[in-house]
Image 1 (cartoon, rainbow, N blue to C red):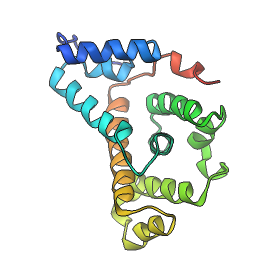
Image 2: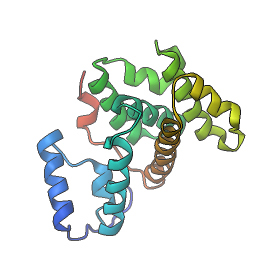
Image 3: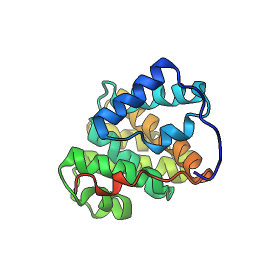
Length: 182
């Protein structure tokens, strides 16, 4: 990133989390290293991310990653398109889907459920003030319950915030993301 912030001494929990990243994916994602200048902010980021992306939800992990890519593409966030595009490739087993979602998700062969979900996430990103009852009803009609609607909105909101931070500080994805699941 383009800011020179010294890393704080990691808490035992964050040191263990970084080690878990190294064991599981082979590296510490640059977004975590960027937040590591302030342990309170890093811990809050990790807790919120983990809850949104990994905790039980009516949305599957792939669906949450798909939202991350579409929102990030709309925001032109290089970091998140690369990182979450890699996750989409891995979770879907499709080496093309991540890039397709990033360039034109409407061209992808998606279910009506996923089309409704991604359309809502895109609207949240472009013009959240235009969302009305009919938009939420379209999600219900596609099979989402109210908790699913909440989770779509929460994931899209998180990535809108995260994209803006990544862009503001010129956060770059780890090189490893570009080759994953190809």
